Image (cartoon, rainbow, N blue to C red; front, side):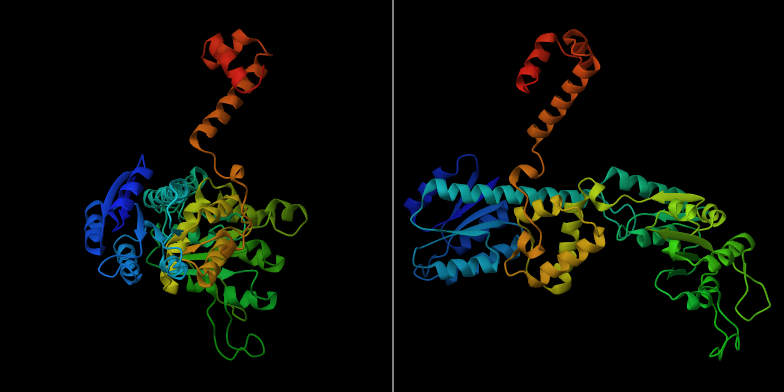
Length: 444
């Protein structure tokens, strides 16, 4: 990783250079040479002395350089190094986007620790940026890298060209309407209308007229003819959200429509043919509703020719951080805020939280954090989430490998009833290797 040291004192510059063994160290002594190095080498890390020529007694040149570096390379982590009597400008620098500050005189170990932490955060953010770019949006508006969710997307793509009715099953906030729109956009009906109606949001006495329409004089206040949502969706797709809340009286009428493909407006006598594809969605257990008599079994089988189960966010591997970064980028642009990322504690909190409200809850939390946060990066406190301890966070590669090896050894020994030779054969290792693994994991 490249580290640019911006320091006009030659002796201190040399001292700092030897502090950072393992980094590719670049050096600059003023604003102009620093920007040359930034453009040429694009360093991931910078230590910046605020007192630079031509006016080393003041911080104006250093603060201007800080702004220029972040403008040219927004993801660079900058550690400001300043005098003991200049904490105010150091705090100004952090407010402008510096990662942290350090007060002279320089203690090599302390400064190295700060830079190492900045490097770790940069690597985390860079990995998430790579995942965001690599995890192509499989469907418009949907961001995922989770194998289960990608399987759902492939299923939607295969089903979309048909006219089969589709039932989307999943918790609130998992993206059921996004998938319904994808079914429409990937179908031959994409040139027609996509009409959505929330069956739980409209009072029962109004829902029938909303769906089927009415003729003038059909009831008190019906002063004109009104076309229902079903007719509006002709040649397109009708999305019935929260279909589990559909009243029993309307379930029978919807079933008849699905069988006959005709509607009869309230107060009307004429059957009107309608050509639509129906997509339903619910977060309820329709099997339980049917057993209690709250949902018609014949309607269930009619609307669920294809049933798609959408996993909740808590079960989607890697999606919490991936979606959080995408939402942060969107809200930062919407709010015109200068924030560029999450702190490491914020990422750990995002990963540890279960998100019972799924993506919709995450949208609300991150939008609020972008508006309310004071610093350049969003913290766990800004998100209103608890920070898990370090060992509760994502495992490093070695820890993950050890955990997998330990589980494999335990399973093999259990399968072979403790027989070392059989377990070694099952694992494909020698007996001495298995003995070493048993010792390593304390399983003797």
